[in-house]
Each structure stands twice: as C-alpha cells, then as structure tokens.
Amino acid sequence: MVIGANRGIGLELVKAQLREVGVSRVIATHRPGVELQKLDILTRLHGERLSLRPLDVTEDASLEAFARYLKTQEGGIDLTIHAAGILHEENIDPEKSFAQCNARNLKRLFEVNSVGPLMVAAALLPAHSRKRRFTFAALSAMVGSIGDNRLGGWYGYRASKTALNQFVKTLANECRVKYPRASIVAIHPGTTDTDLSRPFQRNVKPGKLYSAEQSASRILNVLKDIGSEESGQFLNWDGSQIPW
Ligand SMILES: NC(=O)c1ccc[n+]([C@@H]2O[C@H](COP(=O)([O-])OP(=O)(O)OC[C@H]3O[C@@H](n4cnc5c(N)ncnc54)[C@H](OP(=O)(O)O)[C@@H]3O)[C@@H](O)[C@H]2O)c1
Image (tube, rainbow, N blue to C red; front, side, top):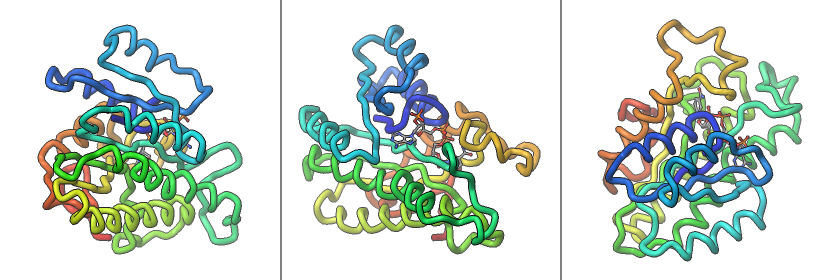
C-alpha cells in the first residue's frame, strides 16, 4: 500500500509494485477531489490488482473512513509506504532564516509531515494481527537528522521530519511487544526529481539528483531485506543508517 500515490515517488512506488508478479494487490491513496489521470490509467491497465482510496492525512473524517476500510482487508497489509509529504505549498516556502518562520506554516508542515504519518500508522496497526509480519515505512528526509544538520534553514520541513523520525522510533519501540514481527522504519529516498524538489534543484551536485523511478526502486530494494531487527531505524536509500 502506498499513501500519497498520485504523483512523485509515491506514484513510482505503485508502478514498481505492480510490475512485481509476486504482488497480488496494491492499494494506492490519493487526496480526495484531485485529478487522478495517472492512477486512473494504471487502474485500467491492472484492473482489480490496484485499489484506489481517497485519503487526506490531515482530515480526521478521512482517516476514520480509511481505518474502517483497512479493517475490512482480511489478513492485513504486508507493506505500507507513507510517501505523502510537503516541502512547499501555496503560501508556504522553505524558510532561509528564523525571520521567515510563521506559526501557521510551521503547524501545517507538522500536520502533514509528522502527525499525518503517525495517524495513518494508528489507523493501520489495528488491522494487523500480532503474529503477522509486516512493514510500515515513512519517507523521511536526511535534513531531518539533527546529527547531520550543518546548514540550518528549512526550519519547518526539517523539524517536521525530525518529529516524524521520533514518532517512527517511538512507535517501533511500542510495537516490539504488541507486534513482534513488525518492521517500522523511516527512510530517506535521496534527492529526487519531483514537484517537491523542483524549485530547489539548482544546488544539487551533478549526479546526485535521481529519477522518481530510481528512488522508488531503491526504496523497495532496501525494504525487501529488512526484518523486525531493523525496526526503529532511520535508513538511507542504500540501506545504511542515518544518524538521528
Ligand atoms: N523529492 C525529494 O528530493 C525528497 C527528498 C527527501 C524526502 N522526500 C520525501 O519523500 C516523500 C515524497 O516526496 P515527492 O518528492 O514524491 O513529493 P511530491 O511529488 O510533491 O508528492 C507528494 C505527495 O504527497 C501527497 N500529499 C501532500 N499532502 C497530503 C495530504 N494532506 N494528504 C494526503 N496526501 C498528501 C501529494 O498529493 P497531491 O497530489 O494531492 O498533492 C503527493 O501525492 C515526501 O514525504 C518527501 O518529504 C522527497
């Protein structure tokens, strides 16, 4: 299952999963009311192997309806990747200085990037049995690492990903007893050519900007090898660990 699958890395994660013959079904979520051209084409190509579900990760009613839907999915879901996230939105740009920070924008970034994935995990976990092996991976960002923070800037995005990492770690700790076969991780996809990064690609070093297809394939490659021993880690796209 991919959360935030309408474009960018999320869409490529869906396509990559559908290419795998061993994957019997993929659930892809999109915000309600948006145009679904690419997901609709995939539905026509793959029929019942692909199920589309509306979900806004910041809306309680949307999350509640989604939780009810998940409870109807017999056997639970093997792999969930939370790809929904924002760096900029209408009226939100990453802050270069504390002077550009405002409370409304900071709250919005936390609402989407930190609270959203935790609420999705809270909707998902009750649909799983204790004995089942499953993975929940949230796409985080290297800039959320406090240990790696040498540049500053991007206050809201950076801190919202740091908070996401703390939620992932805390959830993994709690689930070690409740769901001993679960792997719950944060993963950095690498700088990827999507709408999210497009306005900021000028400063990316040559060869360090990856296509969404490449990033999706690397993420799936890392996730296929992890088990409950890796639960609670913050992983890079090559499978190495990133300092918190
Ligand atoms: N691209 C990079 O270089 C990069 C680097 C590090 C980390 N990441 C992380 O990777 C993830 C995917 O990024 P991307 O580059 O693929 O971004 P993207 O192309 O901008 O796609 C973001 C996705 O998130 C969805 N979304 C946003 N707000 C949502 C909400 N409230 N509820 C549900 N879905 C929502 C969007 O849906 P709509 O289509 O409806 O807007 C879209 O499908 C993000 O978490 C990002 O922080 C990306």
